[in-house]
Length: 128
Image 1 (tube, one colour):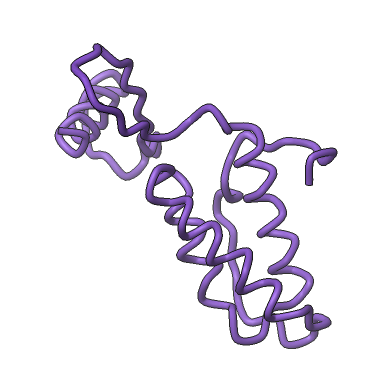
Image 2: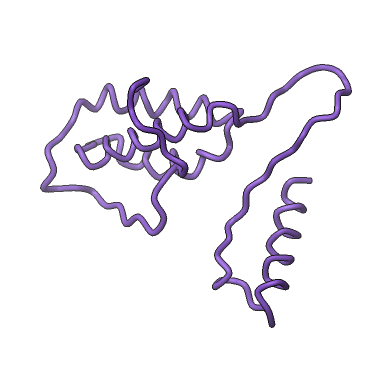
């Protein structure tokens, strides 16, 4: 996967996954091994937890569609290899970068500015 193109998102938005009955099956042992490795990575990379949780549902009969999505996640990990939680000793000041859902349609507010403020407040509370 070193020579593959990178991706800026762990999983496509509005992706509708299902058991792909018509798709050709892939090696389930390899699929499980990749999922388990990515699950281990979620300890320091919680940004991929949702995507891995979704893809782990299809470990019993993975198809080429599921394998393509796993490759997309791996391309995202390649792009964002500098992201993550670094656990160190000491009292150094660290930069903390967080991400939040920017779906303004799910927030009831009088303006988009207020909606953004509400989203940032929720993300800050979860970060704390």
